[in-house]
Image (tube, rainbow, N blue to C red):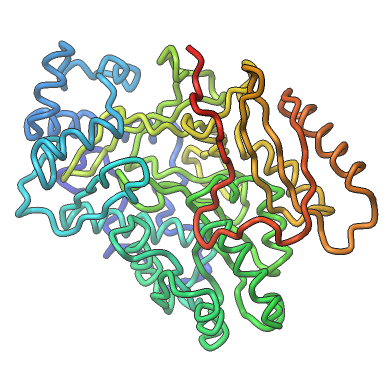
Length: 461
């Protein structure tokens, strides 16, 4: 048992039996333990982790003291709500106050062997540091997750994610850990990636849902049929909600003739924190690494099991920079029911949107993922869409622009009315609909920008 991780029941990576590719689990004892065992493990890990944060992170020492709490105040997992939350802006602020790692870090820089950084799309890129132990633990989880999705030593895996400081880059080492032949493709031009996939006859790859769609369309335009000319049988996707939207996933699967598995990662902790097993019924959470709370973003109270709310995360093992009650801004739902695969970990049942992506239209909350599910289910649309938000006569309104397929047999008016009625029925929002010709909207090579907000001021209060 690792001395830093009391209560951990899993075997070190070196003890995993890698001789049988037919075994269903990477770590059977851990993955199939009872819910009571999961809870006991997390409590033991959290007690140790809070003490590590309090004793070694200047920020947490001050934060806990100001809130009047300390490590000894945690006797149950419910006691965690006594502790203050933290968010992305605080991470940036503390990093800028004490470059490079900030005063949230709980180890000296000499113990840090790897850093990733966020994309910086909404501010200063924030660094995520790892000790050697942190990194090894992370890679063991990635191997566990790849194994649950059916990746095996016989696979040829093309890692088509950015390697430049991106948290998802090193995840390829998880595939190597299970013995898969790994191709470090990175973010090369689409034509070159298609050549690599064809030359190496890769059987699996990882990218974003939008890029998987774009790459498949590009292949067809170049006379390459992804189903017959390529060997891809598994596609791991992350970075956008689309992989957990059944309609989107099914359209990508039809395009490629491959199984699509959604993964969820977080730059502030580590790459894939959750991923689909072969049952594709939610994303198994890295529950021995990260404790989850789902809260009402306005009141801070926990939502009922299965309900939608903001995801708040607490690391359980990451020594370099602990995060206690980190507010992600992601709107999610979870279940603790045992999966049909036999794994008992919590499952993320969908990232339904982000607080900063959520649109409030005349008092009704709407997420782009809600619209996407409707459009991807209707095969008279190509699947590409854009939501334009405007303020007209002091009232907010949305226009959904959607492409019709080539050869659509019907009128634009009929198609627009059908989509408008579906959006109203599902979301409660009355939207305008504009039907576009195929290939009218720009294709995303990585993360797609689905919302164009033309309001000068979003909030009226």
